[in-house]
Length: 276
Image (cartoon, rainbow, N blue to C red; front, side, top):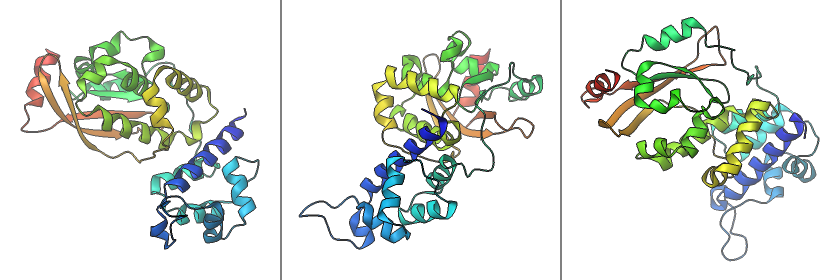
């Protein structure tokens, strides 16, 4: 299947999923039958978006059509999609200003490694567009020692979250953390559809993790947001961080992730102990 066809299929699947989740009362529509309170009909979405039912149906079916930006914006407004979902829909249709490239540098540039090392006792690492871990500092290796020994093809944030029992044991809020991570990844993955790194990762995760497969079907999409992260380390117990992410101006396809120890939690002292 071509990259364009994959994007059309993903867009159609997202629209079907979101349409089924809409609450009819929110649109001043009566239930269907006696009890169906969720889900709008295709004709109801089409009418409110100013489209023909046929055109909207083709869009959900992944037909080879080229909806304009204005048409997609009308649909996202009608379906009340979040800003992240709106951007994802546009990305799937090719309306993002830049297309991401899932290729990573052959080696992490020295100046990026120096930036990681400068974070001291704050764990920091770098991910590529498909979230492969391309580099890290000593504090991150102290937090998660296996990062240095895991097979390179498995050194991926999503893969580790969903398949590594050690990572799962360290996350007391694994259910919500894995859901947030997957929704944030999906928000960025529209421009990656059809590219080898994303396709390989998705195929492997779908076949190795039933939990990932179920979560992927929900089509949840979120923008990244800095937030608290908690870990339970086997050697020092609970660690509490503030999670940040940034992109270097000269390498915008890379993301630098930093976990800042939260003050007054003892996390910095524990990280000093772990880092030796």
